[in-house]
Length: 192
Ligand SMILES: Nc1ncnc2c1ncn2[C@@H]1O[C@H](COP(=O)(O)OP(=O)(O)OP(=O)(O)O)[C@@H](O)[C@H]1O
Ligand SMILES: [Mg+2]
Image (cartoon, rainbow, N blue to C red; front, side, top):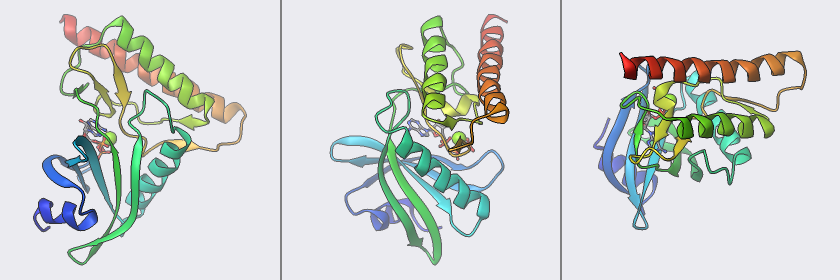
């Protein structure tokens, strides 16, 4: 791929490339996440390869969920949806999101009761809006450096607008169980 500075400038001339935060997903799919400067602030520019069905889904689910989650403090908000952009003869979906300063729980797994309660509340609030997260892994949660605030940074695997009923109840319960499991693991790691 061409220089990320050119990629960023091509998507939006108002953005300045700062650094690449990640280039590949856990599964090894090319999905660049760039830190960019815009209007004296820092933002995240996330690209998804439109020729891959899973990537198209990731993008459209995340945009739909971020629209439903608009105004929620615990979720990094959607700032711009660029839709399809052409880069170096490939087509990508691109979105601009708020950047939350801190470290994800994979980089630094130290939590505390305040952070844990915030995360439970965020999942609860997402459920109230009809969003089931489905992907509660340490890398999708960022905690501020002073360890007083946490945000969910990735809604690309979520489910929205599901019919209410036992299946939805089970999926929501699974979010809570996954969160507790993750918090439990982090707590055990920090004391071992
Ligand atoms: N809004 C944000 N604020 C701060 N850091 C972020 C933000 N979005 C992403 N990051 C950082 O970038 C990493 C990758 O972001 P994201 O989870 O959206 O990408 P991904 O390609 O879906 O990754 P994966 O498939 O591993 O979950 C996160 O683990 C986090 O460290
Ligand atoms: Mg992720």
